Length: 387
Image 1 (tube, rainbow, N blue to C red):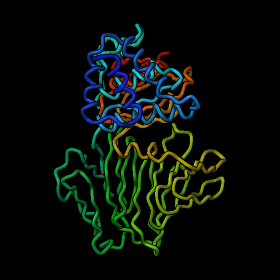
Image 2 (image 1 turned 45 degrees about the horizontal axis):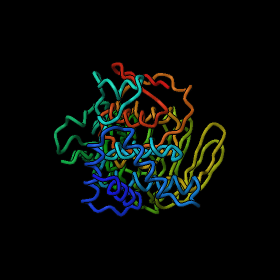
Image 3 (image 1 turned 90 degrees about the horizontal axis):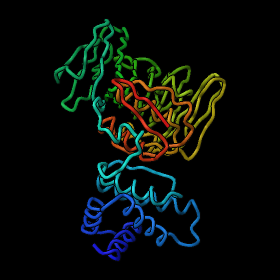
Image 4 (image 1 turned 90 degrees about the vertical axis):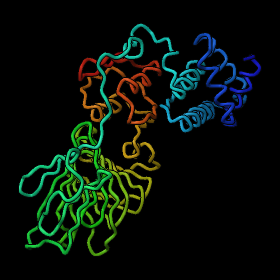
């Protein structure tokens, strides 16, 4: 392919104007390029030609983001954000991550995961949970047969064909006694649940939800640990209340996410739709959609203009990191892949990544290594983080 044709295709790509045929032609060229240096040179030159004279850093970063988001959305491959002021390396990594061309990279000698292949790897998590009934009996949901699992008071507990657990409270408690059940997901697990009032709950890894088998009282109360997304069934006569690590969230009917993992340092309540009131030892705040209440020791803050795509990524089957510290990145990976992580305090860079949670651990670590900021080794169930 001539340099003029390559330049044309890359410019079209940066503009977001590539047809399907042109994108395939460009992908073929990337696959067949003679060396990473050649690839980076052409992409860097294309970026310089594309970028307007007046474009500042923010405009440049936004343009580069459009490039990799467009490609990864079409190809369903990992997306990665790298400092735009390194155009050659950034452009090459974007194309390689977007097109899945890991073998074309020439990693540095210390990039163990990317260079040497992976002897020991961790597969992604899946639909796993244990249901503990009021009498202490435990049901492993991922291996339980579909259909009726138990009777709890006046409620029937059913596992659907899609793996979801559904409670039908019938006419309420048969004996007048309120029974409580708990669903728990392990590290490397997630699960969905429909509560007796029709409220839908999604549990992330290492999380739990404790709830009555019938909401017979004046308020509908549950307790959670870890991270749970809730779509609350509206009932103006019975407010819905969630307790998590000393924080209470009160709603009538709304969609919100609660992250109450102990290693996150605070309870994060993010509102997607409706309105909620968050109460902690530091006071009470009401938040609107797109806002996040952060309740820590002695404080209750509200952050506005929250990136909801990042907050909801886990429920939507993705990891999305937008300027996250390596420690927060590794917290999520350790829970989903059920691995331990060595100390990360010496690394203070910020990371940008968007990748499916269905990928193997090594694939995600390779994507992170392409930033040039960090390297990894996998030793059994432990990830060694290196600079």
